[in-house]
Image 1: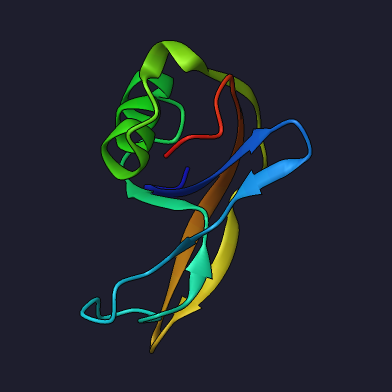
Image 2 (image 1 turned 180 degrees about the horizontal axis):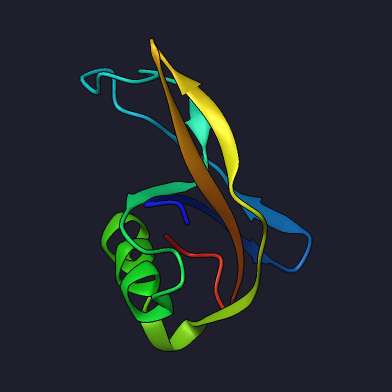
Length: 93
């Protein structure tokens, strides 16, 4: 089981992609979904992370599915990252 996740939030035909801060150690300035550290099966915790990063209220989010963890290279280490898809009732962030 992985201990990191990336969430893609969809509203209609739009997918929310966020730019990572220049100050982060891994992939500064890169575009990505909502990244989080924690149990990807804890949907409440994942939803909280989405709300923290986007301002989208938890009650406007619905978990659709989770994918299989994938190994991604972060510098000289390999992390298993689980992708998740959420639907949002709003496109305002």
